[in-house]
Image (cartoon, rainbow, N blue to C red; front, side, top):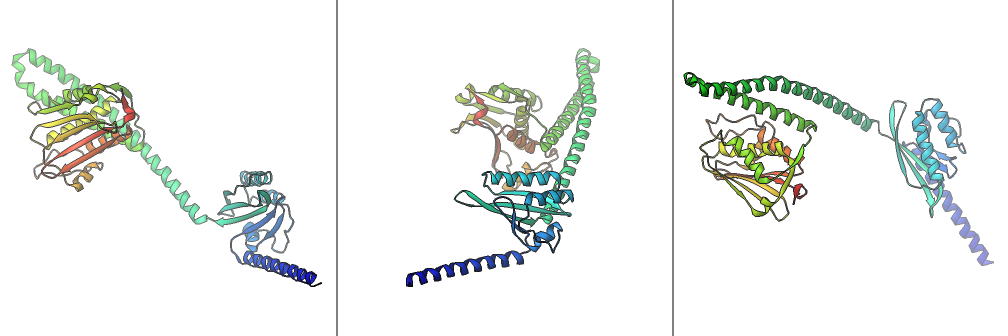
Length: 391
């Protein structure tokens, strides 16, 4: 008898505990501003709060308990609360959960000029579906920021495309006359060489050729830098020996610096390798680095090609010139960044050489490293990754 009484008291306590829990749940749901609806495993409404009714603008005095949620979705869509695509997506998520896919899902959608992030969380016991808890978070502020960023990105892209179109036209408009100037000047040089009466004009023609060639290289660099910035520059890859790459670069540099000493060292391992790269862009990198060393150093410079322990192929351009501080190195790597190294330094260029080299190396999956000390010299290393070396 005492045992039965004890069991009855225990059941009474359990029921009271459940009642308290249910009351607490109702209290929490009704006092949250977060719209919540609870469904059973068949998709029928079991609980909801006032915020949920207000969100969808549905009747305040109607009891939606036991309503079919799929039917409610249909009515929301007819009233243009949901877009058809949103309604279909929610239905798919719920139906998949009912059929056994119990992973929580998120869905973002607009309602009455607001944006909500809906979290559909299946409730389960030992991998068996008990129902759903669906919460709706107002994300209008974040969505507005996202849409603003997307619009600004689109405007920036459009502006970038206009710039690219302008630069492409500029390249065409300048290259054609420059090629003509260079071509005719070369012909005049040949004629002057044949006629001793015109020898006095040789220097002038040479200046025209050098000036036009320099202007052409500037146009090429600006256009390619713009392509790199917009992500439209692609590599035209081919195989070339490192020694040949150095020699081709020196063939173009030495006529401009006929009295300067340039020492070349290629280690045995590097001499056996073949590099897969965009030959013209790789030459541009070497030419830029070598010319910079010649400009800011009066002593002989060194080009050292090697393969390190990590199997990177490295072109080191080494000088004992005026060098740079750490801050000046950072400036040199920035597009249009220029360091006035001496008071009378007029040959500063456009500030595109080193940034251009840096970007070209990144396109190759490599790196450009600068080690410099003020008054002691500079070593610039163009590092190609192992996957670009063909044995």
